[in-house]
Length: 108
Image (cartoon, rainbow, N blue to C red):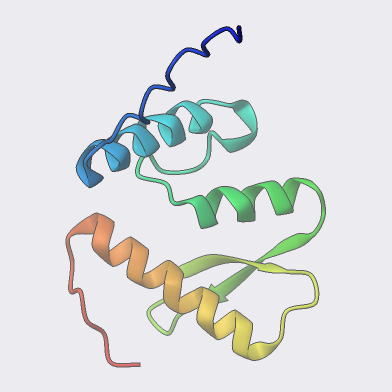
């Protein structure tokens, strides 16, 4: 006579908003780490990856000087092409605009 195995519990289902909230809470805990403390509170996974790559020497910070005198720090991998730099700059500006509540659409 075989022992009955306990029935497996169905996985807990969460709404998208709940998963997003859990993910943001986990990212907020990560940002408290001294290695990542320079990142903004609403950090993205890409920004965390870039910061870790910087610490391991796999990426570099390129400071782009705009015509109005503002300097924009952009993180790219060590062997990045000009196209990759342009894409990273675009992502950086779009994230900054979204966080500051500025214009959401820019003509590039």
